[in-house]
Image 1 (cartoon, rainbow, N blue to C red):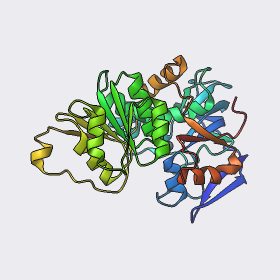
Image 2: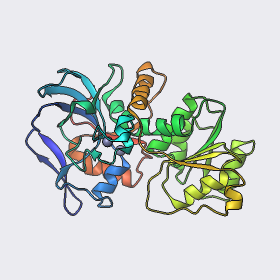
Image 3: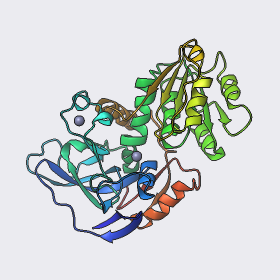
Image 4: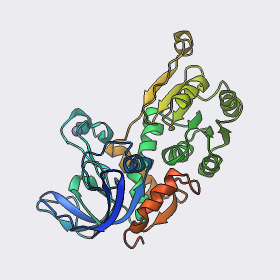
Length: 346
Ligand SMILES: [Zn+2]
Ligand SMILES: [Zn+2]
């Protein structure tokens, strides 16, 4: 089968490899769509340590079950499925609580084990969830990453129930979906903030009421004015940068909350306690999602309430994986999410 493998020295090769065997409790899935995200880019460029090299890249995928290992009862041959991005240990407190993103033993596909940038992938049956008929494979591929991650931040960590003024800083793949979901959950006002005019345009398409270019003038003032009232009650950060987290804390309303979902190596400063405590600002990290949250976003997509028609902004065959990564790295055509389509994607 054809696969995109990452080698030592950040070298990418599209090559023929043997089909993965199917062991007990596993399923083999013919991949119909794989999502390309920032994590893949960091791995491909050598900015993230990849424990297994060479490795077939990719942790977002959806397809059709084509082989079942012994003892698998949760899915059948020909089932449409979406794949979890990692295999979790199943027995730690996070796993027992269903919080897939917090398992310390999680083995991410495309890094710790072979991933979805291939015609086929073998995964534990517990990593394959049913994909309803009406949801395209390319949407299935991103539901278990960009969409469910945003849902966890917006619905659970931020606790949006309706009527809130919010700001989203960093409107790429996950931020875009945070705006889409905040709108769906009834946020009153959504202010989208980014350094890229293209990302701000996409954010407006996702339902933002106002946009702020953070490279211009006084973004703190602009965010507070655009949100109205005493500023946004919730600020969701998806840029993963020191200055954007500090902007979030400076912009949020008194008594408000900042949800930080952007991951990076920088260290933001808290500012003087008289301001942080005096304004009673809550700052929460947000990582991954629970199985129940993933099932909820799949349901929302299947019912048509969650419109993902703007989510995949370019599609590529497997052979052009390097080009997809390059387009993402250079923000060519203002990407939300890119998809590799190894087979027939209908
Ligand atoms: Zn991802
Ligand atoms: Zn675990």
